View (cartoon, rainbow, N blue to C red):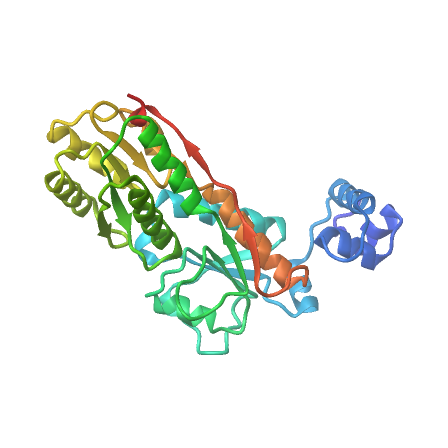
Length: 331
């Protein structure tokens, strides 16, 4: 443009040959704008170096220009949740929004919450008072998986964990496992509850005992290892171990080796949450891929659709997940 002043929306509209309103709708991804016009305006804005004024936009739309994200404090070191955070941040950046991390210090009074336009909750714990407070707030809330308590979010992104867990169990059975055990996550989340119910149902259908030990969220490695030892002592014939909590499968490896078990040989090992360490362990460990970054982006995307009126309250969206087979379950 040959000027030092920032390029304005009016200039973008003039060069693109559209009205200011059309240019604004095209750049925000809202309104009745054709895809051809949207691409024209976007390419024009990029070529001119247009950058929206976030503060002015927030004032015009009477919003904060930020969304909130809450994760249980005890899970902050989990690779899954860190990937989930990046997915939320990716989508927020695409929409020119900031992300505010909400902790227990931000617990809102019932019916009042003005720091953010909406909130994303990752795998909400029924026992977390912060989750209950946010679900009572005046802003829309989107959860990753259902909340098992007595409150309802404005939107939900969920995956069919029971179906995928059944596929994992069938895979272990096909590899020769007849006495599986589950190191389970707490049933205070929808995910943990689904896995426990699916495991018990599968064991009933196969006529085998449902050997299960439940861990609290964020249990340290030594607690994981104590529970693995207890499972081995309870059933010496155990020939497959499925570890639900993130990181618990790698923590189990030294216990299994000390017990003289050969992972991928006389004992099959699998995880319900995939991660980088599982792919590089010896042997690499079979795991369910929950696509955490995609999950975070999907939750943020649904929240923005709720804020823009593109989705009604109560919307539920599905996120596909997958199973990655590795040497730990191949005899």
